[in-house]
Amino acid sequence: MEAGNSVRTLRIRTLAGLLVVAGVISWAVARLWDSVGTLPGVPVAAPIVLALIAAVLLGTALNIRARLRAQRERRPGAKGVDPLAAARAVVFGQASALVASLVAGLYGGTCVYLLMYKLDMVPRQQQAIYAGLAVLAGIAVVAAALFLERVCKLPDDDEGHPPAGSPHRPHHPRRRTTH
Image 1 (tube, rainbow, N blue to C red):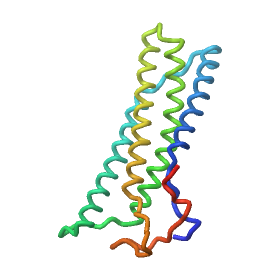
Image 2 (cartoon, helix red, strand yellow):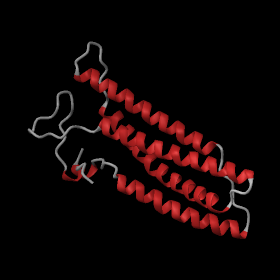
Image 3 (cartoon, rainbow, N blue to C red):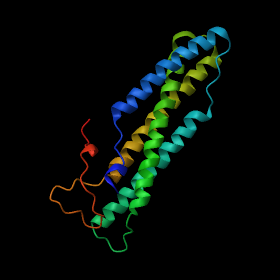
Image 4 (cartoon, helix red, strand yellow):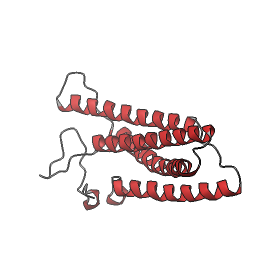
């Protein structure tokens, strides 16, 4: 890859910022919407879909980690990891983490609004539960994506020699892991 085409690592600070900003906006919109009409419900499918995405990301990360470990230990019949497939998995994980941060923030703001003002009705209690579960599932997506990214990250090349079995990757200063 050329220097300008490298994939940057996700920053937890960015993901948390997206979650908080989306949460505040969602809370304000929920309050305004409820004052002028009926607040839309939280779909039951929201936490389920987010949990499925988290499971797919975690499964992918565990599969790649096991294959890399088998390759590193030179086990007979060990399948290697296609670098392009690993890069695609990381990009999918990063996109999922960004969207999940926004979605978790949206449902988090709605959940906070419902907890603060609308728990006197049973349907609103259920909506608050669904929204809370969606927030937890969104956080699980972010955690699985960060784990996948960590599994697929190439080790830094301190001695100028690429790791065995991996293509040469020049060191890019912007790939720092410190935040």
